[in-house]
Each structure stands twice: as C-alpha cells, then as structure tokens.
Image 1 (cartoon, rainbow, N blue to C red):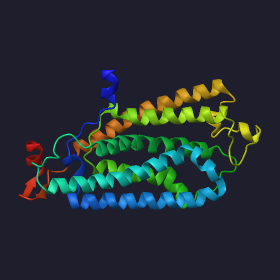
Image 2: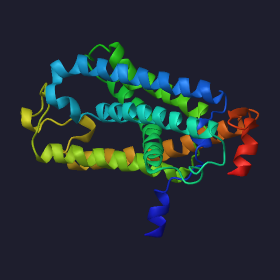
Image 3: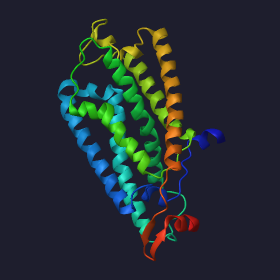
Length: 271
C-alpha cells in the first residue's frame, strides 16, 4: 500500500517550481502559460464546432477527445497555478504558503504528468493508422492540432517548466490509458456502436477503433499488450527528455520579491 501511494505522490517545491522557468523570467513565464491556455481553449472550441454536428454525443467516445479535453483543462489550471505561485513568490520566500503545494496545485501537476506522454501516444497511434486507411478523411486545422500540434505545444511547456519528473510519474498516464482501454470494452459490451457505422458489423457492434475490436478478443488483447509496451517505452523516452531539460537548465535568474531581487538559488535555499 505504501509503495502504491508513493507512486502517486506529487513532490515539488512550492511555489518556485511552478512560478519559474528554465528560460523565462517569472512574469514572462506567466504570460507564456496564459497564451498556451488560450490556444488550447480556442482549439478545443474549434474542435467541438467541427465535430459535434457530425458525431453528436459520440464525440466523447474517442481517445483523441479524452486527451484534448484533459489537456485543455490542465493548461487552464496550470495558468491559474502559475499565477498563484507568482503572487506567492513575489510576496517573498518566507510566507506561510511555502512548503507542500496546495491540493489544487498537486492535482494540476498530476494532470500535467498525465497529458505529457499521452499526447505523444495519440500522435503515434493516429498517423500510422491513417496511413493504412484506403480513403482517409481530410485533416482540418482542429484535427491537426488535436493529433500533432498540441503535442508540440506540450513539449515546449515541458522544456520551459521546472516541474520535476521521475519515471514513477508516468503512473498517471498509465491510469488514463488503462481507463480508456476499459472504456473500449464497456463500449463494446453495451453495444453503443459508432456514429458513422462500419462495413464488417451491424452499427451496434462497430468498434471505436479497429485495433481494439472486442469482436476479436484475442487480436485485441495482443494489441492491448503492444499498446502497454509502447507506453513503457514512452515513459522511458519522457524520462530522458526531462533529464535533458534539467541538464540544460539556464543560469539561476533573479526574481523580484517584496524584499528586492533575489536569485532562485537563494530562494530555494530558504525553502
């Protein structure tokens, strides 16, 4: 039980690891996160506008949609956390809020750990599958963002941030993937079907994705195992990315506090 709870534990120094960046001054980093939040909200609304008239309520059965909605929520809450941390940081390093991050912040960081690797998983699953389609639908701007550009935005967020990472943090992404795989099984047994139907089955038996077709449980189990292996590889890949980020950290910058400019090294020593 202790080992399990440790895997889900969020450890970070509050507020400096939320309010500061490797490359940007705190105020610039706050603006950066604000812009990212606006971009994600705008493309989420555009995606809804494009897809809801065609898919209706079926819009919410797809992995891409699950990922995009969580990414949008996370980037908005991350901006709120960054603003909160910026105010705390500029008030001085000795304030009462120093120490363990508030629950809202820890939940946001958990979501951030979730969306980082899963955004790449969506890219890896979508584009090869599209290459095998005989008549793939055109990819609009909202679709391109949901299947590629969002990952690039999150990659920039990763390198700009100072949020810590260890391989165990991938557990949040793993929970998301396992939950979605469970959703595909529930979708099949409930015989919900898909909005556009399919050639192989009656509408109620159509799988969300051909790779996870529970009409063929053995093949689907193999694909599920392969997906989990891909997840493990991506966890290692992101661990390498975070280590590269930490190795390339810029010289500690100064932060304007109520007691005047102080370097991040001084603030972290106090904390």
